[in-house]
Image 1: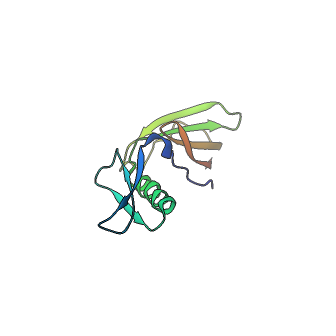
Image 2: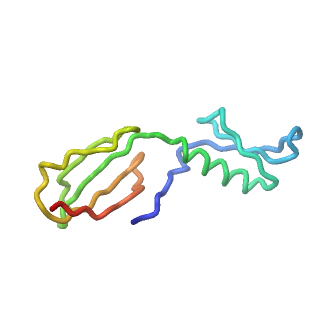
Image 3: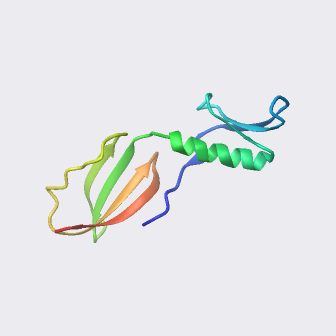
Length: 113
């Protein structure tokens, strides 16, 4: 199982000092209702990047390839969709690749019996 990656580069972040809170506050332009406070500006930024990752609901692109690397199935998955129809695939070993915004976020071995 591969580690899930998050493309934090598609967002605009800013870290400022909050006199009111006495800490650094990280903000994200694309998620104006979110903020993350920390004594350290770096930790505030890291916390905000992680927080934004939980709210990124961009659609996922699923690509299933056979063992030769040929694409045999493609689908766009939206939040809440948890099943796909692979009945047209023959028995065998496949690799399922999941992308979000063009970035590989997961790859899994798929065995169809």
